[in-house]
Amino acid sequence: MDSTATTPQTPVMPEVPMAVTDQQNTALLDDTITFLTASTPTNSGPQGLAEVERWTAVLSASDRPGLAKIKQELNQLGIFLADPKTPAHDVAEVLASLGAETAKVADDAGAYSDPLSNLSKLLIRAGNTLSR
Image (tube, helix red, strand yellow):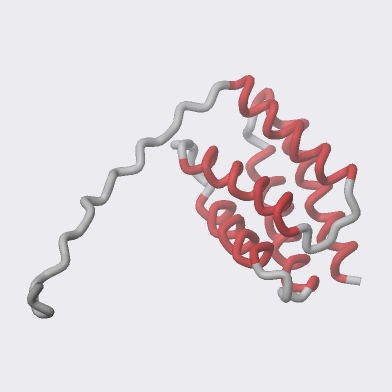
């Protein structure tokens, strides 16, 4: 084969947003709240990363305005959790920011307002614990 020949490229598959039901949204909120209340905040690696990936998938499927900052913070948190050497303080800052942004979204979230407010408080508390 000629070394100057172009390499065939696999066509990029467009991402199709997944449909998320209210029941799935509720389950994800419940799972995340349980995770945050049941564990001591640490750089939780695989389990925390799995939660971040679930939220990233759900939020990417949402057309709700005002989620850009949360998506950005989730991506950063995913990067931090994937690296066990990430300082706890860096994770704490992202958790606190996510908590603040979640509180903003909770104000206009209808039936999800209370669970999102609870999630916001838990994220901020986890961030405070890690920053000590």
